[in-house]
Image 1 (cartoon, rainbow, N blue to C red):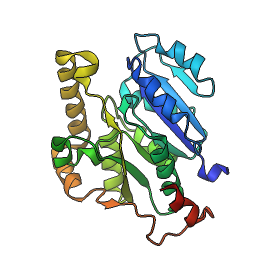
Image 2 (cartoon, rainbow, N blue to C red):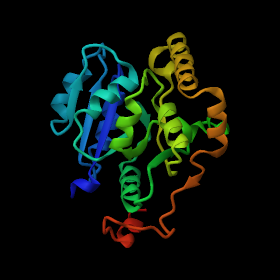
Image 3 (cartoon, helix red, strand yellow):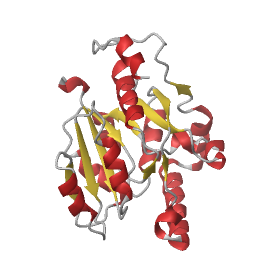
Length: 249
């Protein structure tokens, strides 16, 4: 694999308990990733110890101070070797490594694609109504240089996805989506009703703060409207055989 098409995966997590192991068990099966980097955002449990023992091939970074999702990704990015980054949430259900492999191959196939979003097609209807299954999914592939530029600004907390969308939208970047089956675990199921509700409100507050209500409305209407199609003519600078990619699907 050449450095030109290397893809590093960053998985930030905080107090995910056993959920992180479900994700890592599946991601360990992905064959076309350069590396997986887990960033423990100062969790209060001891899952990082078991991660280091069960997954010796995974880079594990443990932060002494909680920096929030954006801060954890910023730290993880410093340790990546690939020129492209796959961002992945740590609490996913129904994750399928074959879908991840297909998305990675799709991103490699297209030289003009700036970001590929993994659309959560199994999200509840309310989420799909305002396109949060695309706009706010934590699973996306983009160039490392673009992510570094985005994180140079004061992005914090759960602002990350909104900040990425806004930068891509403002700079007229080409963004498409592919379907995948995974969905997040609800916060109230992980941390209780009251704490879950508080964190949900904080999440939406961070997203709106990072983007602004008017920009969110524009993104709902105009951003990432096209699904990636393997059968559409593409310029393939990596020499990847289209037949091989289609067989992944």
